[in-house]
Every structure is written in structure tokens, then in C-alpha cells.
Length: 544
Image 1 (cartoon, rainbow, N blue to C red):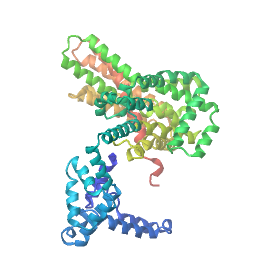
Image 2 (tube, rainbow, N blue to C red):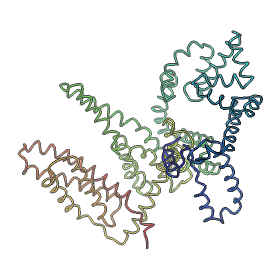
Image 3 (cartoon, one colour):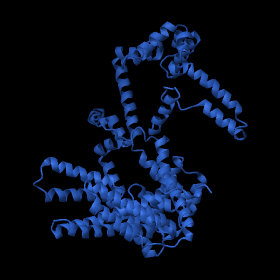
């Protein structure tokens, strides 16, 4: 199940279907087939088979939304429902062949069998005991033979350990150790309440902790300095990609042939640097929180908790974080040092954002190495989504949505920006308009806004950035964003001057507040410009 299922459930209810995973709409499918007959010429017979299968399915489920009054009037419908239920129990190995015949010939016994299944825990045992000879013999032997009971418990323990190993809770070596020292399993039982198997293993396997520390800290440093290790790192990812079927053999051969190209190594080094910044935001959050707690010892515990929560919320809600700033400035320094904007034009933009910034260089590779870019995006994004319980399973809609967000959407944005830049080609660059925008924004803040100052200031700065980039004419993207940030800075400066003359506060206090406004207004104006560039209309598909 994935978040998309909730939407599908709602769509089903609209057309009168209460079945949770009832995604099919044969009427809509028929209309689509009729409007594209040339593409379904050799599949028309399959639609008739699907209609027949749908009819069997509908007549096997007591679904009032489809069968309506037939549930009360049709003996044939109930006969089909009973027969389908018995067949399903046999497929699930709840009943054997003899039990199948027993229930198939008696609707009363089938109904009693169904009612027994409603009994929690014991119901499943009673069902198997009644209609499955092998299970019945198994249960009797458990009660009459201690040796058999002991052997069965050993098998159950091994089955449980195998499940733990498959889910990632324990290693193979740990599983073998627990199988030989079964009493130690009791020490692991409290950790089963943890939703994430990773946490179970992290808290009970010291070697796993050391390996993870090595992967997160030591390995990136080695990769940064060692070309051969970077090459092997990518080859290992290619092997994993083929195992997970997100990489075709043809793409794998193409990527392997490009491994020694200088741009590949350059991008890999940059990707390693991005990975090394994973914990920068967390370290900064702890540092800022620690400074606040040390410098405000007089604050009550409740106020401390509130402020720590506010700091944590700010670090997680804002689209830009300390870690993303480090990644962004690294990419900018790389482009300046090499005097090469073209090969970093996407990474320069994306690196400043949280989460998606980790895929800045895989996406940047698209122009020169499309096969590698497709694979890197699929590998990193889909692996990250699997930590989400239930909704993050492999092949689910959530995984597909994440892939589209991290790979398809940035490429769409780049294509639209190129089309927009081509449309602006006949215009002249414009920069003078930031002055009236800044004057208007600061005047509104100074003379109009009387309450909710912070909200109003944020909205005005976002708007100032948006209007700045819209009226920049032919100016390049980096200049548009820089100019928007400067318009925010100018707004803060003008507002600070107004505040000195309008407020009775000491000039020093107003100036200190103004310095903070300069920083905050600049960032918000730049964000406004970026969001505007992202969500401006698609000029490629405008009506001509």
C-alpha cells in the first residue's frame, strides 16, 4: 500500500466501489481502447477475457457496491461466493484435498468454517485441525510428544531468525550464533517493537556500527583522494543496479566504457564531497542549540524545550540548510576555480537545496552522460525512500513518485528554463528596477504593516524576489537570483533607515535588527526568485 492508494480508494468510492484496491475501471478502459484501436488491434480478445475474469471476481466477493440486491435474491451468486472461498482456502494451504471436498459439498460446513476463522489466533489453528490432515497430525504430535515439540520449536526459532535476517535485523553470523545459543534470543525480543530493522541491528551489533561509521566517515575521505577506489565504488553500484533491475545491460556497458573520462572523475569527486556534508546540518543544529542553552541558563525548562523545538523545526522546514549551503558554495567555488559554468549550471542551482541537492551532480551528468545520470538518480532516490515503513516498499507508487521528483522534474525544469531563456533572447538585460521594488517593499513595511510583521516581511521579500527576476529581461539565471538577493538587501537597508527616524528605539538596537534583516531579507528574496523560476508557466506549450 502507498499514499497513492488513498486517492484510488476515493476514486473507487465515487463510482460506487468499496473495495480497497479496486483500481480497475473497465468502462474507462473500453473507451480508451476504442479511441486507440490501432494500438490494440492484436489485443481485442484480451479485453473480453478480462471482462469474464472481472465477472468471476465480482461474483466471488459479497460486495454490495457491485452486486446490490443480488446478494439477497441470487442463489447462484452465493454458490459462487462459497465455492470461491473454499478454493481460496485450499490455495492458502488451510485445507487439504479431503477438506476441500468436505466443504465444497456442504454450504453449512463452509459457513461454520468461515465463522471459526473470525476467532482471534485460535481460529486459524482450529481451521487447520478440522480440514487439513497434515496440520492435524502436527498439532496432535505437539501435545503428545515432547521430542516432536522440541524439534518443532527449534524449527520455529530458525524460521524466525531467517525472517530477522531477511528484514535486516541481524547478520548471517549473528543468526548462526543465536541458533546455537537460543537463550540469547530473549535479549533481542524487546527490540522487535522498533519499526525500522536498521535500529534493531544498530543497537545490538557492534560490528555493524563500526562498518556504518567506516562507510559514512572513512570511506568518503578515501574516495576523495583515491581514483581507483572511486572507480570501484561506481562499479559496485552498477552491480547493485543490475541486481535490482534499475539498470539495463546496455546502459551498464555504456557507463563502464566512460569510467576513465575526466568529467566522470570530476563528477564523482563532487558527489563524494556532497556525501561528506550529510551531517553538517545536524552538527550545526546541535552547536546552535548548545550555544543557546549555555547563554540562557535563566530560562525555564519549558521555554528551553520550546526554543529547542523551534530551532529544530526551522532547520527541517527551511528548504536551505547549513549542509546544503556548504554543498552550494563548494559547487560555486568549483565553477569559479575552473572558469566553467556550463558543466555545472544545474548543480550550481540544485546544490543549495536540502535533500534534492544530493542528486545535483547525478542530474548534472545528464547532458554528457545520460545513462549514468538515469542510473544514479534511480539508485540514490529509490534507496532513500525504502526507509519509510509500509509506503516505501520496492516497486510501490511512492518509490515511483520519488524517482519522478528527483530525476524527471528537475530535467523538466531545466528544459523549461532553456525555453524561457530562448524566449527572452530578444530582450535586453534590466537591473534598474530593483530600486523601485525595494522602495515599495520597504515603504509598505514601514507605513502599512502594523501587525504580524514577520509574516508580512517574509511575503514582501518573496514577492520582491519574484518581481525582480520577472522583470530582469535577458539576464542570466545566476544574475537574476543574485539581483533578487540584492533587492532583499536593499529593502532591509531602506527599512532600517526609515526605522531610525520613525521609531523611538535606540539607534544601536535598530541597526543590529537591521543587520539581521539584511541577511534574512536577502535569503527570502533569493528563495522567491528561485520559486518563481521553478513555477513560471511552461512557455513550450503556450497556445500559439
